[in-house]
Image 1 (cartoon, rainbow, N blue to C red):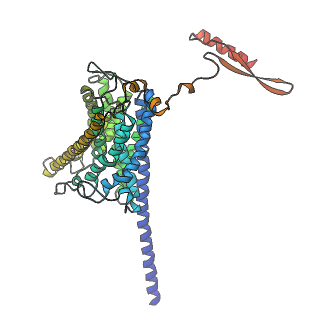
Image 2 (image 1 turned 90 degrees about the horizontal axis):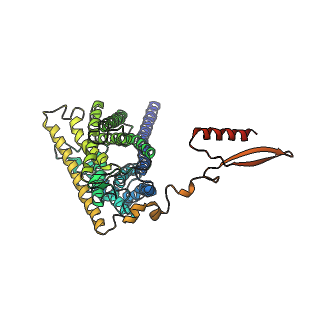
Image 3 (image 1 turned 60 degrees about the horizontal axis):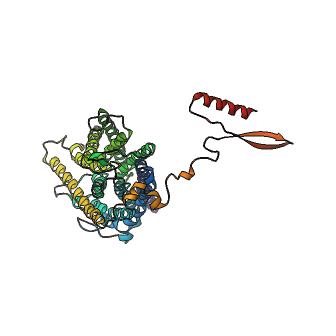
Length: 489
């Protein structure tokens, strides 16, 4: 009998050990999942950097690149010091006020901090593109710190903290629906970008007699590369917002979010391209840049509901996002605001539509499924109220911030610097230094090497040809023949 009791006790201990091990494994899997997703989202900063660098003129490339880098560096300082405390520290329904500089923060929450830090950095990066090529570097550092450390964290507390008033809802079970930040991230960044670009004013030469004049970026391939990186990053941005992978149902939700992101981005790109080709709003062409921005707008719009709409709903969101991008881009130009990257159209326009779309298309609970249900319409109204509150908060604080810097004359660079470019006077590092190009053989010289053998020793004798290779095929062919003859002799 004693032996049986001993065996039962050992078995129970083994079961307890296995249970503890499984719980630990689940916890570590979730932590690892969040860290990996965060790293992939962090890589979106590279996409933003390429997209913005390609969209500006070569004389301002270094300037825009260092701003993208400092969005991370300043953002890490701001979010570590105050941002995370405002966002997720215990507090009230408006703002948190614990864990400043990680005070009393458990180490198990560090992955949570990192995940939300990369979101905060994204919100700040959106603004730098809209204000590119004419913003004082000091002013940029000020607004980047404040957006990452205060403006964005307060909004994320409203929507994603269990204490936040948007999260709690009006008291009848309805809550603000924004899974991956169409409103919390993209509307905040887009609204700040709109206000900043408006207060700053357009680049010199962007509008002549009230009509917009194109100012082309200096490298389309870099824009395309940045666009691809951002689209790749959106898979983690949306899929990672599940925040865990160990619980039943986590995998399908992540998969649905990623599939919906793909479909919404694709349909946004196709619709924007088709509208551009018709020439109804802009010049009729198969525009690569419009296609990229249409895809990004679709992915921004699906952020809010990527986990809770059918794939056909994601297609519908993408279609309307394509129209949304074209409309917002046209309106911004009509009111005389210069946005070199169309950041306002992509992020504010796409984000607003995304917040509105969730209560309309959410599986089983959306208006299209329960059109006569009062709760479905109440959910729509609460999301609309949330979008309005986010836009008002971001817009008013941005207006105060940029307006104050404008009054102090520290917001915009001088006319001379804007004309000549910011890379050399501000950073001393041109992106494309002229002295680094060319070769030592003269403009038209061709250097050939001939191996000869004298007294058993190989000597390399340089033969210089003063051939003048001109545009005519006969001169080119003759030059090639002479080169081959020299090599074979």
